[in-house]
Image (cartoon, rainbow, N blue to C red; front, side):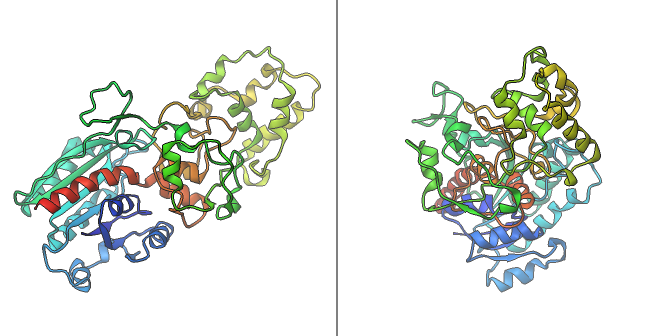
Length: 423
């Protein structure tokens, strides 16, 4: 079975579909780093980096020697920033119109099935008019459309990530959305036998090295640490991998590390307001704040106000006696400190986002006093360790935050493959 992937990103959806039996013939991704990652992991696919608005769909169809209706599946997740509730939603954002180019490809290829993926915010954009317009245009081409919101954790992804899918097919072929395989509790009435509990953060990343590499070591390769017993998920993520790639983390200032040290598993930055300000700061906390394991951000790369906080903290740490109250202004418990969040190892991660590339403050390792690494983020998205990422650390985190979890793509892909084989 053959597929084409538009707005392909680094290839999360196509990777899941590949495991379900689909071969991606052609992909389009405008971001050069993401396209490079896709090309590296899909060596037999042609990857275009051209602006999709400038591409003639008929030229692509003819170059692939496909007649209308030959293609099994056309997939795509047009950019979601315009629809996302995470940032500012702008009705006039030109990215909101890129679905028209996706539909242009549907009209040219006439695939047996199409699959659109996007953020939940698309459902409420312009009062639902965007989704209605998408379905109206596709139904005018003879397709039956079905809109469904899926939770990635329900399909074995160690992350709570809800995404909207629009699936369409020609004629009476039909399609059934995949049955959940996981839930918050095995006692939940999962409709499939052998239902399992959600995969949690600990099961996903606890086997990875505790020490992270620096951003400029983003492409260094490490040995796996010795682990007494791997979880089922970890064993699956390691299949075929001999060495560990992409295990670098973002750097931080010492005053931010102090905040992190004080945070409990599953805790938020706002919880810092509850600390006992009369408590003396233990020697081990002092030493961890000042030690440089390669993840302290250089002063000259920081904003002036951050430099001032950093220098003030270093001076205070030289005092023989020091309480948390002496550092309360530096620690902070309001404003930007509230965005800090440490992962709970006993639960799936909260939703990973592309903004991790700029700031990982709400993705703090459950045990280590640092941000999660690129590889840990990839694990939480269900990318196996053999799937490696190109570009800078910034580009890698952006790609992962934007990706469709491969295990979610696999679940939907299996259902599509079954429908196509029956058709």
